[in-house]
Image (cartoon, rainbow, N blue to C red; front, side):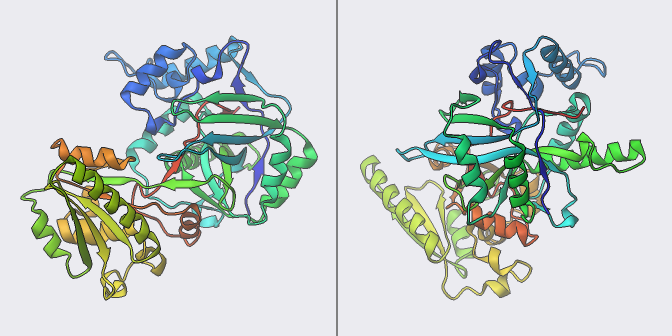
Length: 443
C-alpha cells in the first residue's frame, strides 16, 4: 500500500526573496543558457544547489556538491529558507497553456513525502529505464546536502477523485505561495495542516499503487541513499527521514494531465538512404508521402500530414518521418502486420504503441540502430517540438527525424502497474514540477 506523510518543508522566505526568482526547472531540463539566467536572477536561486557550476580548480574539499551543501546551510542560517511548522501536505496547482493551444488548463496535485519502497514490493512502479550517469550525480548531491529539492512526479488512479475534492476546498483560498515560471506556467501552493484532512488523504491513498511519471533517476537515487544509510546504521527503522522521499501525486483521472510526445532526431548513420530505409520496412509499414515544391505548398502539405498523423492515434499506429527531399511521410502499420510474430517478447499492450514500434521496427530493423546505441545516445537526440526536429534535418544537423503522437497518462500508469517499461524518453509530462517550491531535509 502507498504510505504518504505530512512533513515540515523548508520553503523560501517571501520577506527575503521573490519566489519566481529562486526556483528552477528540474535539473535535467536546465540548459546552459537557463543555468546562466538562473545564476543572474538572484544570489539565492536554487541553481547553486540543483545544478551548480564546476570550476577548473575543483577539489574533493571544494566542488559543486560541497558548495551546494554550504549554500543550503548558509541560506537556512540567514532565514532565506524557513521551516514550516506544523507538518503539512501541500495542495499544488499548475495553470498553463499546452503547446499549440490557446486555452488555460489546470493540473491539481498533492505534495507530501512517501515511503521509499523497493520495486519488488509492488507499491511503486517505474515505466522507463534509467542511466547510471545521472544517478551517480544525484546521489553525490544527496550525500552532501541531505536534502530533496526537486519533486518526484507520481501517478495514482482514483476515478472518484476523492483526494482531488479534498484539495479543492483549500485551493479556494489565497495560496500560501505562488510563482510563474520560465514558460509562463503559474504554480500555486496551499499548506494543509488539518490532521483530520491529512488522515483522510492518507486513508484514500492507502490502497493505491504509484507510478513514477517523471523522476526515475531521483527515485532510484533515494533508494540507493536509503540503502547506504541502512547499512551504516546496521538496522532498518522505517520512521527515519531517509526512508522517505518528497513526491507530488497526480490522479490519472484528474483534469489537466497531459503527456507530450518526444520526437526522435537521427544522425551519424553510415550510408543512409531514405529509399532503402523505406524498402526495408515496407513489409510492416505503408508509407504515404506529402510532397511540396515551394514554401506555400510546404505549409499545406505539413498541415495535411500533421492532421493525418494525429488521426492515426485512434486507428492503426502511425509515425511521421521527415528526411528532407521536399516531402513529409506517414508510416502506418500495415493491417496484415503480425506483431505477435514480429515482436514476440513485447506485451500485447505495448505492441500497439508507436514509440515501441519506432524503436523495435524502424530504428532497429530499418536503420540498424541498436538499443545499445540508443542508450548511449550515439545516433539519437530528442526534441519536444515537432518544428525543432524538422529544422534539425533542414539545417543539416540530422539525416531524418521521427515525429510521434503522445500517449495518455492512463496508458503510462497501466504499463507501469503491469511491471513493464517503455523505451527511454517515451513520455514528456508537461508542465514540469518546479524545484525549490518545497525542500525535504533528511534531518
